Length: 243
View 1 (cartoon, one colour):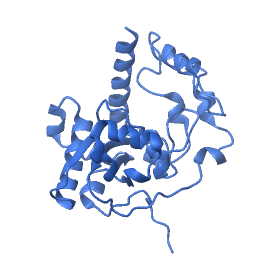
View 2: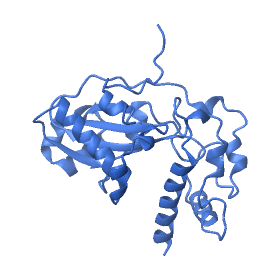
View 3: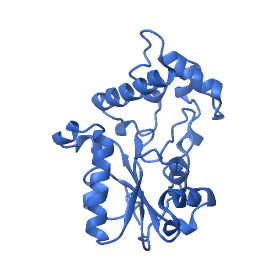
View 4: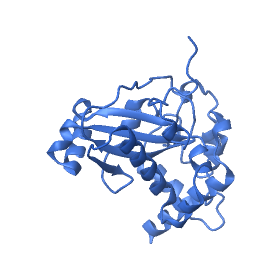
């Protein structure tokens, strides 16, 4: 049996996949780890215990490429477009059901923990999740609570791409020396990355040299236009945070 090209495209929905939301997972809230279930109930209320979570992401650049011109008139074009598409999907496939947007928002729900459960996310030296199909070129786009029973989906578990990468060129490429092979998450390393990005004329203001050196699924890499957008947004966030 031939393996699916994208095993994370689970819902057989052209509405989602053709618009670039090609990472899809559904979880019964009752079956989730207690911490995530608690977070959901805090946001949704007691009825949240009986529903399910719809987690959507983009792998590769299709989501960006499919953004309509009108999206750029919005304050957060990617977030607002992801919510719009997800609502269209739910209203089409589950008419009349209640739902609530959990992400994008400030609500504290563990996206990376859900990503690991879905098989999307494996740890990497960059502290970004790495995906076997899309490498470092994927993102979480929407998380919704939905009432009722979830659709039947699988959570493919695969090998971490970093496990078979001997050279790990990302580590040597980081000019801030903020990466290490055993993936520790330390405040010191995060501060080293941020400090270097804030240097005058730092090459890391508008790019991540380590991320660009990752050899995994390079063909999925975002366009320079998309990279410029994301790194400009993150740089501005860091500047505001440090101010």
